[in-house]
Length: 195
Image 1 (tube, rainbow, N blue to C red):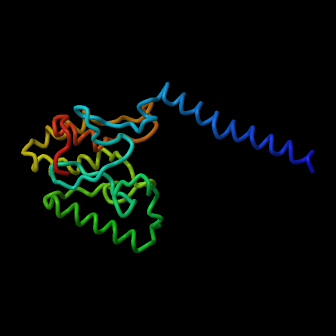
Image 2: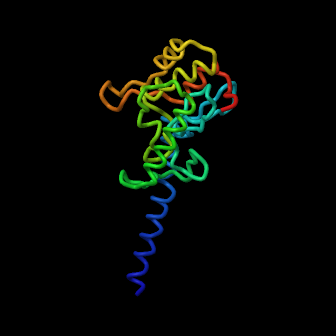
């Protein structure tokens, strides 16, 4: 019995130290050394104050701000501890009802807008935390934001273009814009006001 137990316990202790202590410490060290900003949550600060993360969306509902994708996390939107998809399939009536309610809210916020509503403004992402929207979704909201801020639509469109994130290497991904960074630019880089 001792001949079987001793190697098993020894292997357990060695693997526990390797995989439970040395490996996590090494990976954390490499992350802090090479990718400190990302490893610490990609926090966005303005005047020394944390205003959000580049990785997690935020809820903006004021007409003078761009709105992000709906969040499937509940009961609080963009709750990273509850990250998951809604699990509502395309034939689920709950998904259709949620999408219709979001379309109605977007139309009520900007009744003169006759453009088709971009799909990313009415459907949640797989994680429910997306911080970015498509350029079409940003352009869809440009007139409402311009009107609420007494700006020209051209100025708002220029801001969208200046903050556009191009596909990686020109081919991977879609052009998009960070809602947080765009809203900070609207506020002139100052901490965000009433959202």
